[in-house]
Length: 101
Image 1: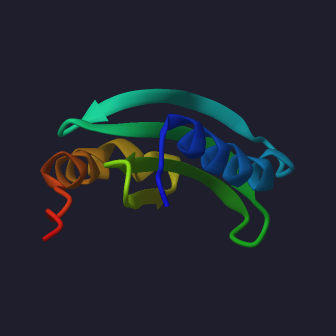
Image 2 (image 1 turned 180 degrees about the vertical axis):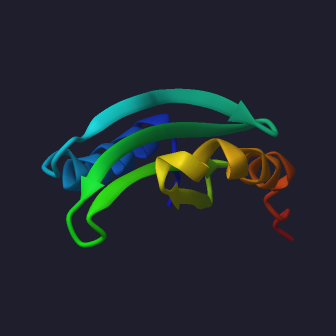
């Protein structure tokens, strides 16, 4: 399948629709980026998770080279979010798609 920005936005919008119905949902980021010369769509949000009886802070990064799609997910409670965010960001920045033969 050929992935483009429109596909990424569609996929992330569908994902967000699941979380928008949860209590305390807040959309914190919804935008595009260039990661290692690849198109990326980033969403960040928080919500109250009734199963854990606490607030969750999540970030998803959808990255494509037009042929393949990789989704990175980071989820934690808000108090630890900033502490581990640099590790998540380094992982994304170091990611490279394998070249097809």
